[in-house]
Length: 65
Image 1 (cartoon, helix red, strand yellow):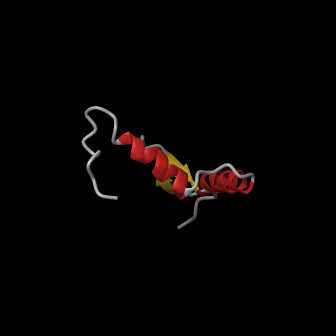
Image 2 (image 1 turned 90 degrees about the horizontal axis):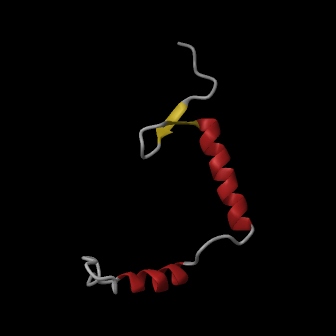
Image 3 (image 1 turned 45 degrees about the vertical axis):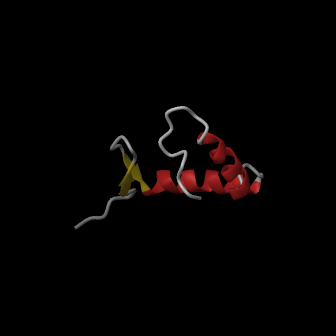
């Protein structure tokens, strides 16, 4: 059996196939973004997400943290 040059290694949320080369490029771009300081800390995320409980109709507002 002959192997593909760029095999499909997964699928996105819409069912579109993702290849090894494509996912490697995405990962490298994400690592570069973090190295440039483009990220959100856990603390900042927790502060922001705590405010989500104040949205009317939000069924997750009373979950324990």
